[in-house]
Image (cartoon, rainbow, N blue to C red):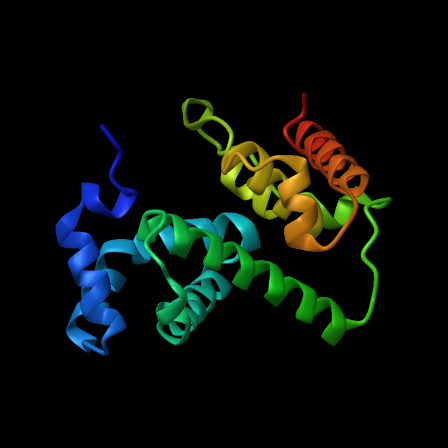
Length: 183
């Protein structure tokens, strides 16, 4: 027996995607409602700033609307959208580097120190804030590798860097997290 494509497992979702591909705005709005939370969470983890994550989420859905015709249904729509979101965030980070035109070093960790423990020891450590305090390159690699499960080769391809660079950034991110968390 031959396996059916991934989209066949969710016929209602694939119908909504097909309707959106044909220009049905209500169908696209449904796709937005179904996926906006996950896209926002990914953007927030990768950029570390709630306001910027909201803007990037909107950018992802604008790009999704523009590129919806390229979705072929060989994978789940959410998988396609996730990859699109990663590309939008990485592209934003690259353009930000061009706009700023400076290199950020991590020799001075004071710039990244934030109070990570609450006054109530029962609240524990705020790992999300620690990740958000990482330099953008290290944060992106950490999120893509340790949270999203991408391999170094995939991350290197997405970022246009060498595999060794990705490994070094992941090592740096983990080291900085340990220092910020006092471990």
